[in-house]
Image (cartoon, rainbow, N blue to C red):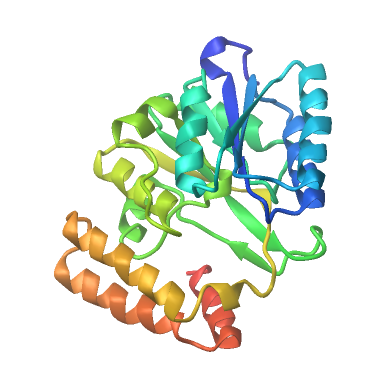
Length: 281
């Protein structure tokens, strides 16, 4: 069991923008409240102007968090700045060393943070702890896919040059480590992936738990959003950054461009099949 020491208190961190679903946001925030090991603080960054429906949910949940003795901090960007910049802003308001990411449309199982904090207690040098997730559309009890990520450090390091080795909405990390490697950097669609690579290169211990501890809401039409020339340009931009910064050698860069670039141009239905296959490797 976890001891209630200040060293293992943590802050929750979430960013919300105008296109979020009020219903999903409410459920996501409730899943934080239902954690068996709840946060000491919760930082919510409003990334630009929100709808009145979203603001109403936030007001109601703010009161519930405070009643549960969780300090609820609201920050607001005057305009939409994107996920990476919003999370950097939220990080500055986090008083705790441990920071848990929560997405505004995903559900964390009640035992997520208990298991995560127990890992940190047993392995205090760890910088990042993530989990497995399953993805659902309309019914959280019937996932249509499980997104598996490598567990131990060596496999995470090996996989990191090919694909994102963490499920962003499941991670808990040390604020000091994230600050030392430069925090989130504005690389559209790949802010978190780029961050993990810098942590791994700095040789901090990282891990993923083998448990599925987050239910991630993913519209089945996500394949339409992850393909096409628009996404391909961002993919190539990211790969160019990685080879420029020395994360990839030329052969791996060419391999990534060929494989990942080709995947982006597949028809959506075929792209979805490929995603499901790759996630189970």
